[in-house]
Length: 94
Length: 473
Image (cartoon, rainbow over all chains, first blue to last red; front, side, top):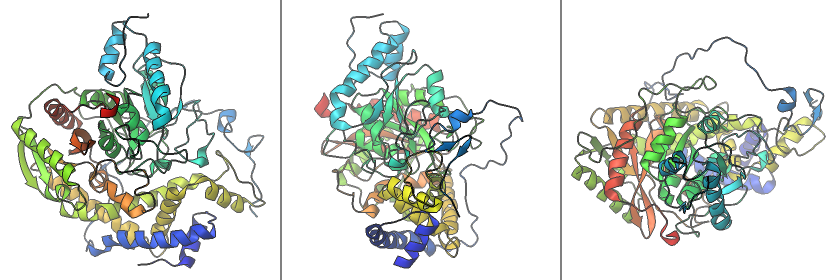
């Protein structure tokens, strides 16, 4: 099952990646080959098999509801590219 | 306290180091300094470390940590430009447990970007070289830790394993690496790749050191709700025989296409030796685990990665590429910050999770995962341990697979199936092929680490493999 250049562009949009033209060409080719290889899972008839999302059969993991120290604002913003007060400053989204 | 003692970092085990410290024949600072001296001598060639820590903090045996593990106050990049300059303000639980045990950090080791790769060539900071032959890869993604341990640049270290990133580099570098049972080691503070698969584990020069380090990091952590307590305490192995151990040899994993003859031969000899040591050896079969394990993994791991790596958006950490609008900023930051392999996996995973494809790809892969777990469970009704080569090949040349993602993915053919089932796996060196280490993979049921250590230790004693690279002896 190949993937088209348009589909790759669409997926890049979903993944928030601005790809260069060269990357777009290469990824269209590479993803086509990889999807063909992984598409092999479709050969198995697994209608009656339940999915596994997690390797351990844990149901709930309880913890005490208690106050614990958390990060200070200065720690939270220590790695931020831009800070304004106690906010992350970003370019306008709309 | 200074002493007239020469430290051969290539041969000193962590257990011996701890003994020297306990008898005050050596200080922790001196021991740490001995490793830093070895780093200064050999790491310019090998590039195991992304950065080292000059001061020894702690009174114990020092350790190398893969740069996927958050360390408070020490830059942690996951081998990626998108985290360049990122200095965590907290310790991962495994780092905190090492510190609590008194272990100074020697440094942060190189990794394929976000632990995605099988050669450490995907690091944004340049590849690590194999200490047995620097024209070859150390394996990956944990090539930095594995090469550091083999080159005497650390007595032991921690790696992370999603589909083979501990076991495969240990195989290619000739040391002992454990991928623990899923859930026995905390992932809190470990930079996430594929959360239902990621595990942290120890790398060491021998099985006892590996078991000792596992005992230090394992156990439930309230900060990682997927963790559980060990079912029994870790036992440092002592038995030199394998009486009563039932070893299964999965046909498909030992006869798979692509296994080099020298690798198959070394593994076959190790299996014969296990029988001589008293193990009950028989053949078994895991047909669909091998036929469908790799495709299953390359749907589930990228799908989870595409979600985990969504957080790198230039807002809270990491370098930002400025733009007039928010989404342009995010898209440009991610294009500039991620290398080729993370981009490939983000794209593949996003596609596999997208509307119209979810059931056919991700949903089907999760069912295959059940099939793999059931096949292994059936094999463990008859056997305690399953054995195979860890890697189909010995260390390959730098660049040999760098431009062919599918060829690179095949490096993990034999390590992936047990990862899908959350099973522990141990790599033990079992010989040389063309002068390069061959690794034996031991797989057990969940929580069977003590059996793996026992089996690995008895084989290690009997095989008498010299873990010091021939060119460094």
